[in-house]
Length: 233
Image 1 (cartoon, rainbow, N blue to C red):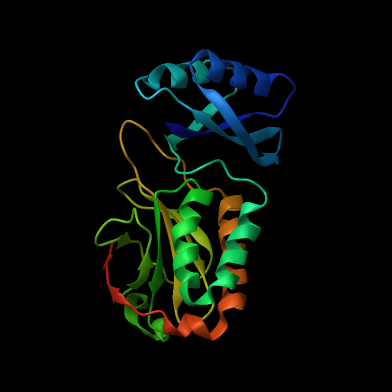
Image 2: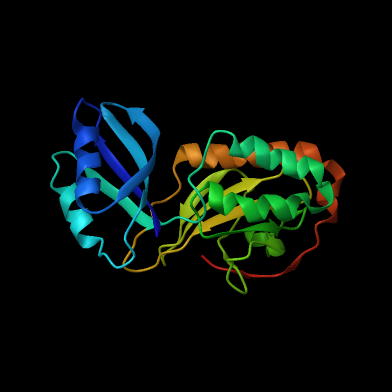
């Protein structure tokens, strides 16, 4: 299966090589490495690996934890192929080519781009700012792996951000800036794996995709119809 492994490590020569060797010795076949952050002598890296389905991840975690200064932030299943630099542009091209299904196209594609489990286009009342609690969110479109009904966090106030609920589910949220529409992407907590929360660079990427899609779709966003959903806190 395809796994995403996020580690925080010292940003010095040799440490990345140690992490890569440990992954290989544990049975992981590295297919992609993405540097999410370099700051203050530390780096945050995402490794996408092919992992033997029958193997247990405990040995991998122990091996990584034994490297001085390395911290494992999360290990979780990834869907689809590793992300590439051209995928965002290709997705926006698909949205532009078929604007009638533009929101559905975006919602269905984003989980694969962000190594998430599911996504929804949620709708809040346009006057949410004057309502207690921001108003009840409804669903305009849900990706194929979304639970039924999707359980959403409180999505207002409408700004790009990430949050984690008590059950361990991680969310990234980005508003379209029109019609009370907001894109919500989720990583579920599923034992024995533990997903990492969305990094700031991932939230920025999501927000850029949503803003660009909003420009492409324009008035069509007003046509996204709601259906009821449970909101959790």
